[in-house]
Each structure stands twice: as structure tokens, then as C-alpha cells.
View 1 (cartoon, one colour):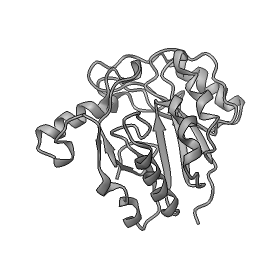
View 2: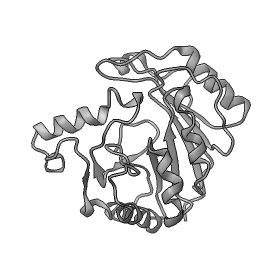
View 3: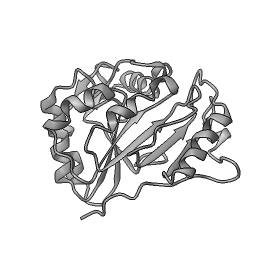
View 4: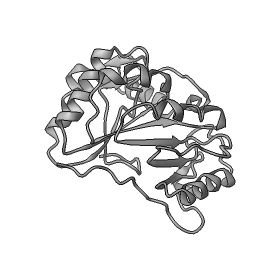
Length: 237
């Protein structure tokens, strides 16, 4: 099971990645991959170099209890180095495992509309892009061109203000501060501005964490309460 607040489990048919924007500067997945490599974990023999694990592609079919599954918490499925055939195989598994809900998150938004037409888009696949500051709000424009049943924005780590998000055709927004060594602080007003916009436009809002070097100390309470809203997803069948 996962300790990520907005999901139940993680599934990593790909591990490893490369940095693409400032949100990657203190990547938790890179730190974890190096730690697992040092521990001798065979999945991370290549450290944080991008690695395909074909034997993991069918893994969710073995999980009979319905779950929300974060796809590739340790990589990016839409990385340019992941072949289209592999992406299709992952999507085929998600379609077959219809009793789960799959949450796919990417920073490679430009690749989405290029490959979307070659993929099946079952109702249990949620697709999101990361928006760490106003400079990367354009990723949502590419997301809107993809026929996902649920489209979401992960505004995490929020390292700069995003004064106004275009929430058209966006079904869910997650906000969180950066955590771990070297974590950059998140101004509370940045989080409030996005929360207030979501409330005004009736978009479900999830506040994940304040972050910091010791995120357990800062918690996830925003203005006296937790915000744990989820999108209205298609019913599991």
C-alpha cells in the first residue's frame, strides 16, 4: 500500500527518469532509487536510469481488491525514452483491470496529444500533469487535448505562485509543498489562491501537505481543516 495521501497503491512498470523542470530539482524518486540500489534491490540495479520492467506490466490484474493506483510513482510513463508499444501495453492492462482506478501523472505534457490517438482510454484511467509554478501552467493545455475520463493537475511541489489556473475541463486539483532535504518553502498564499479558485469553480481540491524537511511536523491542515476532495469518477464495473 502507499503512503501517498491521494492513492491506495503504486505500480511501477517503469523506474528511473531524467530531470525536465524545476519541480524535479529535489526529486524524491531519485533519492529513493539510489537508496534502493545501494540496498541491492534488483529493480534498481540501474539506479535512476530509465528502465522498463515488462514483467510488471500485468501486475494489477493480480490485485482483486479494487484500488486507486498511482502509475509510475518512480518514473514518468510518457518519458520520450518509453517506447509507444510499452505505453500501449500499460494502457491495455489498465483497461483490462477495470475494477481499479489508475492515476497517471506526467511532466511530459507535450507528448500526450502525440500519442493519445494510439491508446485506448477506458473510464478508469485518470490523467494528470504537474504544474509547479505559473511557468508550467501550459501543461494543462496539452492535457485538455487528451480524452481521459478524469483530468487532474498536481500542483506539487508548489515552488512559485500560480495566480490563476485555467480549470476548464479539469476535474481535480492536488496542491502540496516540497518535502525532504533542501525542500523549498511554499507560501501559504499560493496554496490558498488555488484552493479559493477551486472552491469558486466547484473543482474538487486535495491539499496533500505543507512539506518541508520534516513534513510530518508541518502536517496537511489548511485554514483549520484538511481538504480531501476527489473527482466524481466513473463507477467501477
